[in-house]
Amino acid sequence: MQLRKLAYYKGQQLVLRGLLRCIGPWQWLRLMLAFRPVCLRMRGFRSGVLVRPGTSDVLAFHEIFVRGTYGWLQPETDPRLIVDVGANAGYASVAFANRWPEADIIAVEPEASNVALCRRNLELYPRASVVQAALWSRPGRLRIANPHAGKWAFQVRPDESGEIVAMTIDQLAAGRRIDVLKIDVEGAEREVFANAPAWIADVGAIAVETETHEPPTRTVVAEALEQYGRSWSFRDSCMVSQDLVAEGSSAR
Image (cartoon, rainbow, N blue to C red; front, side, top):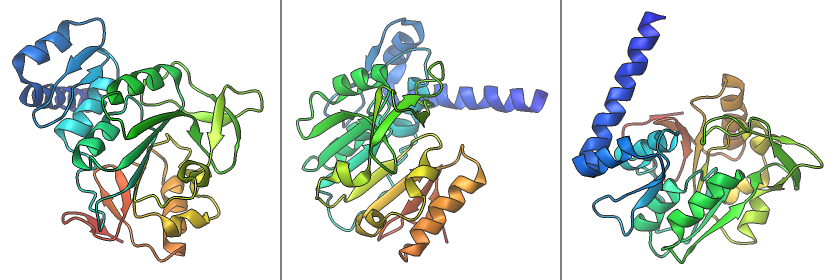
């Protein structure tokens, strides 16, 4: 137990130091003292992003803008369509919009407070749109199963009277090819990748967050990718399948 606590506090210290380097001392202090969302600006980005103090937004910001998660995605050509599933506060979409300004971006997020913040964070990016929905294997209705969870940990479950619209990849793509697909859906990956849906063969780069999920989830994703002859690798906390895998990953 003591070792776990020590690891936790060391991790928190690393996050705080990383934030300090990224945003500077004044913005860092504002974030530490604030009770309302704070707009943090990063060098080289067209706009700042809103962060809710005391929530998982801080960790999500660190993951995207400090650690550079998803920066290793290397599609063969500049993408025309990017779909960010499980967009949360929109940080990955903001990073994608700055890296590929000519791409259309669809940010998909089921939870209302996250959707509202995501829209605010993307309002200066005219090629980005936000869809309040959850990714699933078939159209239908869903509900948030854990409404009191952290902002980046909401899970959905089938419910015919649920408030969340369930959408498929085919519905989101609407006949277009998805060049970059990021999926972080807190355990729903098993439902999405079950039975190896045909869209897997038509997507360019795929990044699926699986680190926090049990091994069977990774097995379902891996088997679906491999059924279409797609190689994959682990990078950060993601299973990645793309035409060009960046160095430093462990390919399968």
